[in-house]
Structure formats: C-alpha cells, structure tokens
View (spheres, rainbow, N blue to C red):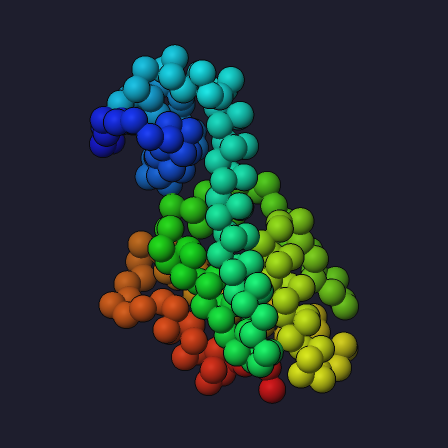
Length: 196
C-alpha cells in the first residue's frame, strides 16, 4: 500500500479518488477510513470531518464516479451532432475512453451491485443514469435512421454490449493493448456495428 502525503487542495476529492483506487487494489473488505487516512497522509479525524463512516464515503464515491461518467457522455450529447451515426460513434468512444482513462472506476461501479440493467422481451432498462444517457441517445439515433422500433432492443444490446465489453477489456489485467482504446472503439463501431 502506497502512502501519499496530502498537500492542500480538495481533500474530499482526494479521499474519494484514493478510496476508489484503494478498493480497486485491495478489495472492499480491506477498506477503512483509517487505512485511507494513512494512504492520503492525513489524520483519521480529517476523514471523519467529511464522512461519518465508510458507507457515507462509498455513497459519495459512487456519486462522484457517476457524475464524472455522466459528464463525459453528456459532452457528446450536447454537441448536437447532426449525423446520428457519427453521434453514436462518438458516444461509444466517450464511454470506452472514460473507463480506459479511469480503470479503477469500472470495477468500483459495476462490481458494487448498486446498479442494475434489466432485459425484457422488448426492452432494456437500467437504473444507472449514465446507462440511460447512452440508451436515450442511441434510441434517438436509431429513430433518426429510420430503424423499426421492433429492432431497438436488440440493437441497443449490441451497441451497449460492445462499448461496455471494450471498457471491461480495457480494465482487465490479462488484456493488454498498445493502441488507443477510443480509436479501437471507432474502428469496431464503424466497420461492424454502426446503425445501418
């Protein structure tokens, strides 16, 4: 475990970032505010000044990652890209890039069991805000491309499964890639999946 010395700045953000990294490296069972304080280089009291307990900190960490992920996806949505295929491509690239750049976030969010995606015979729903941003934008693009509604669910499964799978691969210790994950995503989506 690496101990860092904290020097002025945003202690709450430092605690969240280091807490997520610590859980990624050591697992949630080993996580405590005292260990985190030592790692960050502050007293345990400094942690308790911001968070009443581990659960409070973890709730803040989940919201922190969710907000950052939402912002990454919303940047694409707010570009108002006129070509729906290009918009879908950019959204997929943003999804994968976010987790390739922040590998400790992926397992923290998706291994937590806090969020769920539910498939039915006709739809795919989730209670995780970034998933819903991805879903709603993808549905808008499919509609703009004239794709029949009866194909929406299956297309969405393939689109989300591809970008989520690439994001997962970017975070696997057994997978290495010397290139740019965003470019790989673009190549795959352009050649194999972009809405026809």
